[in-house]
Length: 273
Image (cartoon, rainbow, N blue to C red; front, side, top):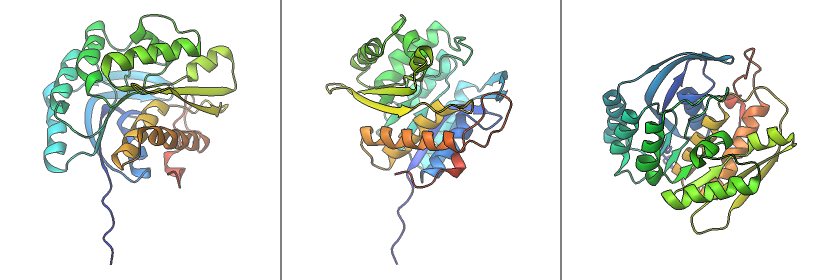
């Protein structure tokens, strides 16, 4: 009898979404559906739903560090996904815990709310750049986050790619620049994402825009899917390709919950990868 392969151990360091559509909850669903073993270090607790965020309570940095250490010291980690980190102290603690970690780290720099409000202060952004960007295998900003990091508007895909290349060159990490907001501005029926890897030509990933309001947690789902796929041994381009397929399938399977931006249908996705 053949012993089944153990699932890759994926640690999500992110905030909790009480309505289950994004954050830790979306990560757990994604990791599980892609065959991974999900572990968590909760950085913040939110009261939120499809209409918005009604409240946020941060977790003490020492407790965030303790959660990471508990997972790493006993279970072990094959890949890490990082999401919401609200302040410089938490970022410093997370970076300290991960500085010696060998598995790939996928960093989703959650910085801009759907409303356009900036969620983190200048000190936190500086800490992300200095402490976590150099540790990451991949950084996955959407267009508003990329603009915030670049310090300028990015009105074209060429400008988006240029900004991603600047961040990649400065950090040594690959950057997946997500172009969904660009297509919203242009009223285009195509979504174009670009993967920038240091020393390599950019790779473009394109899909048709899906006309739906049920997109809550797409960034969390994409980054945790990439981390899971990297953890099971896929190359970075293949992990990005398969993760995008997973997100598209989950959007198509959305259950239609909520009056606002509803959650994805992670549990309905089968056969990716």
